[in-house]
Every structure is written in structure tokens, then in C-alpha cells.
Length: 263
Image (cartoon, rainbow, N blue to C red; front, side, top):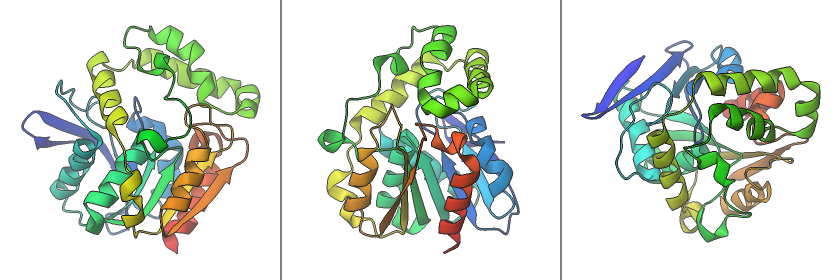
């Protein structure tokens, strides 16, 4: 499905599950596509109306070559909700999608019911650990090199060993669907400008912060910072999970998130 939300921007999205069910918005990280949520949508669409957009510049959405920040990416989602006449959603964002989810709840608090922040950080100087490896934002890197050098590091050690065929499948998907270089640059521009630290105490939404304790992209300590800083937050750590904890331990994380959203 597609929705034109700005004169120069069309968002591609999935709209799954019963229309009368509580809406759940799944927000991808930098370079992520809506298809990356397949292990969530297949389960959660039974209980929720699941909306999964491609952020601008990625997947099947428009590539817009103009300055962008996390606020603009969050506003894109608000405009999509307006088009779909959805007033309020639960929001689950991972990585940069977690930054977008924070911005969405902070700037449009009445549009968010409950918040799930996965493998993400508060931005700015309070972020723990170095920025993600430069290779993640290298627009000149070949899809094959990305698939061989980067994709395996998105998962925990055990998953890389016992589910090597699935890691290889993700790598093949990257080769088959390489992102647009302009889209990559603009998404990292937004990511690098994000800083919600001073505003986090304003978040009054029930919030579940999730992390994998083997995340090599975003230091798991960032999850502890978020859980301490957000007034109504709880922390769930996935033992053995990497940056893609929701893929590696999909049954566990789906159950935990569903239980949290039903509270």
C-alpha cells in the first residue's frame, strides 16, 4: 500500500490485521525495510491492526534528497496516521526507529498509547558507546561486502552459530534489495542529529525498553539509561540477543511486547 503524505513523499506501508483491533505501529531502524518485521507481523496481526511503514528513503518509499531530522521522520508517521484516520497507536521502534518513536511520543503525546523502545539510545552526548561503525553508513560499500561483513554482526553469537542459514538469508536479501545511497545518507543525517535526553522525563507513556545483551551496534547500557530516565518505564533484557533481538528471539519478544501492550 502507498500513501502520499507530502507533495514529494509517498510512504509504502503494510496494514495487517483486524481494522477494529488496537493499532500498533512498527518503526524500522536506519536501512530497515518493512519486510524486516515479518516475524512480528505474522503473530501480532492476530490481536492488533499492525501498521509497518518504510521510512522515507528506504524500501518502497520515496527517496527525498533534502535535509531531514528525526522530527521530520516522526511527522511523516503522524501524516500517515492522519491519512488512515487513526487517532492513537501503540508504537514499537527499533534502533533509529526507537529514536523516531521517542520523538513521536514527545511531540505528539496524544497520538501514542504505549511505547516500546528496542535496541536504541537517547542520542546526543549521553549516548553510551561510539556511533555505529562507519561501514553501516558507507554508501559506496557493495551489497555483497555489507552482507558478509556487517549482517552477521547484527546478531548475537549463538544465533550466528546455530542459525547461520537465517543470517545468510538476511545477507541475500541485502544483496537483492540494496538501499538507495541518498536514502542512506539522509537517514544517517537524521540519526546523528537526534538528542532526546533533556526531554525524556516528559514522557508519561507506559514504556517498555528492550535490549539484547550482546548488541554490537548500540551498547546495551543505553537501554538502562532510557529505563532510568523515562518516568514510567520498565526494562527487559534478552539474554544472548544482538541488535536484531526481535528477529533472533521473536517468540519471546512478541510475547513480552504483547503482554505489555495488553496491560
